[in-house]
Amino acid sequence: MFETLAPQVPDSLLGVMAAFAADGDASKVDLGVGVYRDASGITPVMAAVRAAELRVLARQLSKVYVGAGGNRPFAACAEELVLGAQHPARTAGRVATLQTPGGCGALRLAAELVQRASPGAQVALSDPSWANHVPLTSGAGLTVVSYPYYDVARARVLIEPMLAALERLPKGSIVLLQASCHNPTGADLAADEWQAVATVLERRGLVPLLDIAYQGLGDGLEADVAPVRALAARLPELLLAVSCSKNFGLYRERVGAVMLVAASATAAAVGMSHLQSLARRIWSMPPDHGAAIVAEIAGVAELRADWARELEAMRVRIAALRRELAAALRATSQHAGASGRFDFIAGQRGMFSLLGLPPAAVTTLRTDHHVYLAPDSRINVAGLPAAAIERVARAIRAVAG
Image 1 (cartoon, one colour):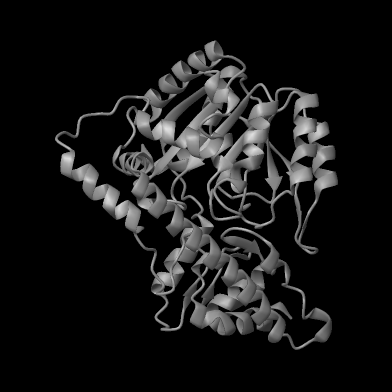
Image 2 (cartoon, one colour; image 1 turned 90 degrees about the horizontal axis):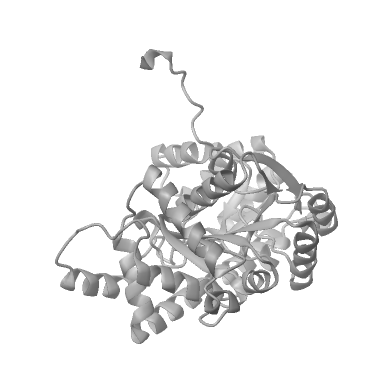
């Protein structure tokens, strides 16, 4: 039976991880994998997470299933973090939230719900977008198209071409938007651009699917979801895919949530029944440990304050690394005309920027300089050791020409 299977092309980022692990050079730098690293080079367990975990374990007497809907205090916490405690959609009962295995589980379940409601519907992804957006949505049977988003050569958002492409989408199409800290570019929409997008979505009857993976790492906890709250107040329907991997440091715990903001409380209840039905067919019951930690942090004022302070420190550090890397790249330039080529890094948000290097240059960075990027030249600024900034800048300049 299985001899009929052909080998699959390995995931490109997993290949980068394997190559980095096999590299014996002591000065190697991993800027490919999307994890936050502190000044010592490790991805830490946040102090608030460790304290909450101990509290959860101390009173846990059973490992029984939590139910198809997942940890309900966690679901309420996710809604409050993203939409706010008193958002009109919440107070009207128009929000249905189901816990998922990570943000990937949330995206896939959202796509499955769309496929059940409108088989073969189109989902429009930004160009470029996170590589896993395509398999997660197309795997549910949706038709994937793209809209222009970012000019790599000029390092700017293509708002007018984006709006024009959205205008041409059929009514009922899904538009996947990243709420903040766009992956892989680091370039977010400005407030007025979000309003322009909302106008098109509303006029054309398009449904946004908002990927919320980096809340708190861009401009702050509230600012990073301001566009989400505005869309939820303006549009009758939207889907949200939430991840706690980055802002709680719970990567391996796989903590996420899918939210449906429906046109009415009745529609939200029906939507929740379908989400539970779909989840039952895929993973049946969700894991609880990470969700219980998040719920504990949300429910204890001291822990929540500690977590918010830790997250803010991470955000500030990433922004500082951006400025320092941009300055080092400018200082190491050998050509006056190209000295500002990478200045855009300082003004972007979140963990990633897209350097715009050709594949050959990315390969040379790896083989000659032991600096590892994603194949599309996405750099994880949040993984950059401060002590290696100048060396990394010189390596990038050496291959950039």
